[in-house]
Image 1 (cartoon, rainbow, N blue to C red):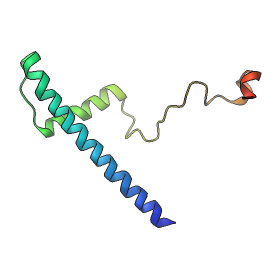
Image 2: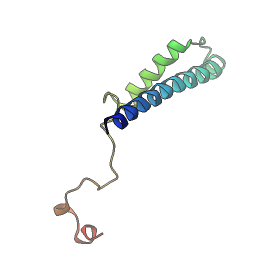
Image 3: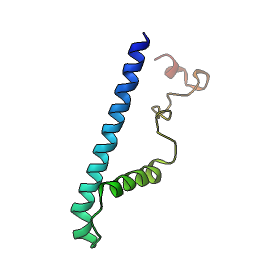
Image 4: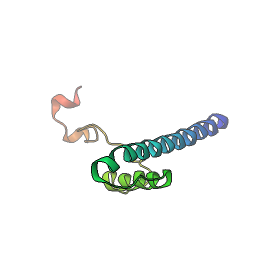
Length: 91
């Protein structure tokens, strides 16, 4: 059983690293394609693209850590059954 848990953690880490690398490359390519021609800004390196990615995560998503513990439930999903309407609790 423990082998599956370790394999799952390993896959998660690889998936997370791939998402970070892909996001960094995407931000860098989009910046270097759009910003110099639209606003006359200089092109950026991959490290600067990573910085822009982290900065946008902080600014637009808040500073909640890695975001794994903060899954948003659908509207009304977390309400207690006592506060629900009678027809909602019978669904």
